[in-house]
Length: 315
Image (cartoon, rainbow, N blue to C red; front, side):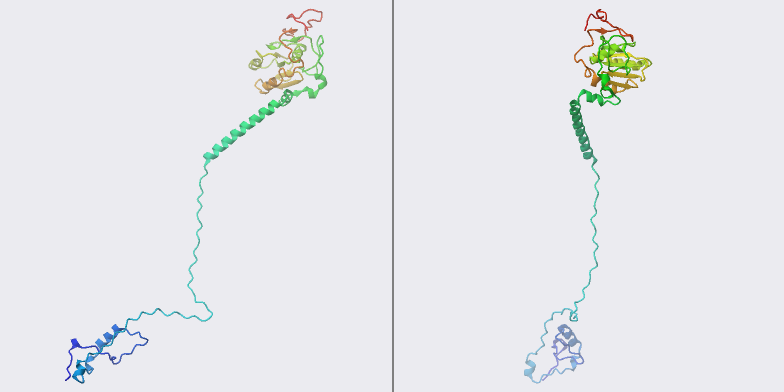
């Protein structure tokens, strides 16, 4: 005899629910099927059993299908010959690296520049010394600005050097060469405050002396600056000279330099280059022998009548 099962012991039916559409492609979801079965009207299903054996037989239940792997979304097919369109990335703008300009380090540059200047100065000075020492006194004299070299201007005049008596006339005044008196003016650093005879001074220059002359109107302080260059120095003498066309004039045998004031550095250059070097009788002193110490523009012909010189010498 068939009995109706209570709701709690009812076995789910494997029959399709009336009105439900069967799913295709094995996509059925067992959970959804169970819900549908649960919600359907199972009371209409005949649950009677034909015989007791059938009732006692185990009820077959539909095995739930394994949960199929969710399929990946279908790929879009492309037309033959055409490549699938791909999304283009936006162009990335390259950023140029920023160059940081470093400040110039002036310290080392200044140091190297200073060392370089000093090195050049040392080399230049050494080269100048070699050059200067390699030059003869005549060449050094010719480098003095404004100097008159009568070896080049009037070589014949420079060659005149006879000893004569009496006053002489000279082409250049103060004279730098020419015939002269047999007695020379003392040139042992002598500073004469009055004019002297050119004939005596010229003989001193033949021995290698430098004769400094100045216009009598030269200020006293300028005269003193000249005197300091003369005092105590052999082969040097100094005296005023009338009608001088320049404030100061320096003479050595064959050379002359005229300047405007006693501060002119060329005065020292002239003395350094020509004192004793311009001598025509090297080694002959001008501090002894037939010397003259008096002033006056008229030459003293000592020895003309056989008399001795003032200092007791004779030549």
